[in-house]
Image 1 (cartoon, rainbow, N blue to C red):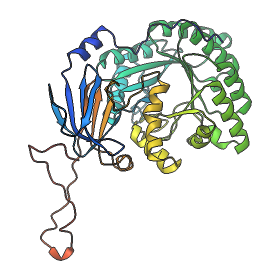
Image 2 (image 1 turned 45 degrees about the horizontal axis):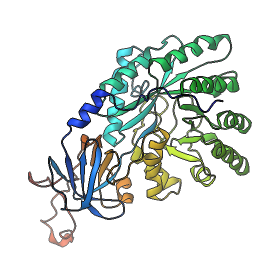
Image 3 (image 1 turned 180 degrees about the vertical axis):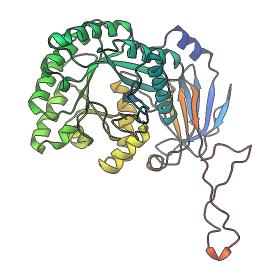
Image 4 (image 1 turned 60 degrees about the horizontal axis):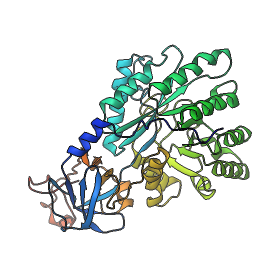
Length: 426
């Protein structure tokens, strides 16, 4: 496939309205935050970027100052695999509504839920074709426009069939979807009678328009996966596969050879630790450690958010990181990187570090260490393009134990309602 096609305009780059909003955002100082390396710092944000980082108490504020003592400050997560068009449908009394206004409402609510968890950028897969045509995509594009300045929403156009007579209309519709504004070309080759032909069609359209590719596959057929890797090798701006849970069910040597092919082709694997999604036959997680040891770029997404594929899906990147740390054997730092640094790279977004000059895409989580934050991350402050866009505050209270000194609880840490003048509490 061609790998030097001219790129179309970046759908995720700030337009003039975004740039104006960022420019008008007053400078903000985050005071006394704890970094993952243990340092307590002040961080000044301006113009959508980190302007300065200094020791706690050292930076002056030209605008608001937020007390983040007791909070851990991290690069914000990104969501590489959401399904906004089907989200929040698990409790529907009948088939989920496909009316554009209902899809837009669900997609918007789902994006805001995930933003509240910390994800300031989301790649969301949207079914196109069949009876609904391009209406679901237009609904999600409306969500993207409505949430400008709060979160970056990147729709993926996902046709059901692309080969044979049945797929001809969907093939034309996929091209129209890209012209409408779909940021990524996607699909489910496993569901097409000709998976290889389906993949070829997707890669051809992506190469024509300079789009990334994001395909659903269980990856349980080594020969099919090898053909896919050979076809996708070198395609720019990149190819992602997920959830690839079938790799975990292959013999170890077979899975290792498949991982080597994926690494050589430069393909990203998006695993779903919180469960699968529509079209996925398996609910296990891809073998993350095996893939990483082979050099595959791995990231982690949420998948289904309270739809029929996962009625209790939470869409929480920190829960995905927690599961990777508790079940896949990754260190807390590695697990969090898969939902933040690696996720942003998979979405083609610039890197974020808590250093001067980097984008002000940040998440403050109540806690002193990353491992504790992944374990009990209730209170969160989310920063997108240099301003606070979401805040969640949780307060835990216990009954009064002072009346019984013999109980020996008087010296334990306790937490009540915060004083009006106090800083953020958990």
